[in-house]
Image 1 (cartoon, rainbow, N blue to C red):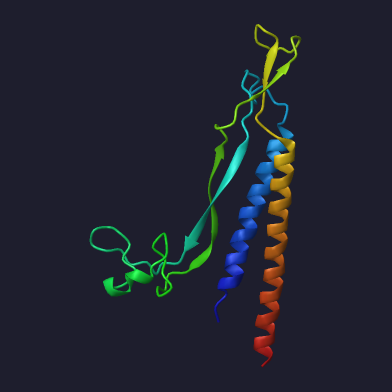
Image 2 (tube, helix red, strand yellow):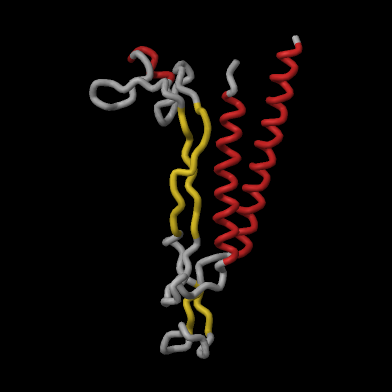
Length: 164
């Protein structure tokens, strides 16, 4: 009996938990203008990067490229090299990395009395938008709930199959 559906959902639960933890960290640091050691350094928003995990059915060709199909079947290959005819299937998701958002700029806040204010009285505040963070949190929470529901349904199907 294969428990692939349970493993896939379990990996998604872990990935979504990491995303929720990262969003919570972003929200907690919305006003942080110092590093943990007390030195000046504005907090940068962090983002979670997910990556699909595939089973070990990929055969590597002699040139190092993935060789999924005989050449006459490669016309049916989808973008990214995955084919309808290959045994290679998704087997979960993983967190490949947590990166800082360096694309968006810091928010400028006028506060001349702040210890981290520049000569013009502006303080660099973290590049965190609370609305964006809450949308990310709700999205991760809903994905987590969907995977819990999937695990319950899979357990019920396995139990029903064992009763036959």
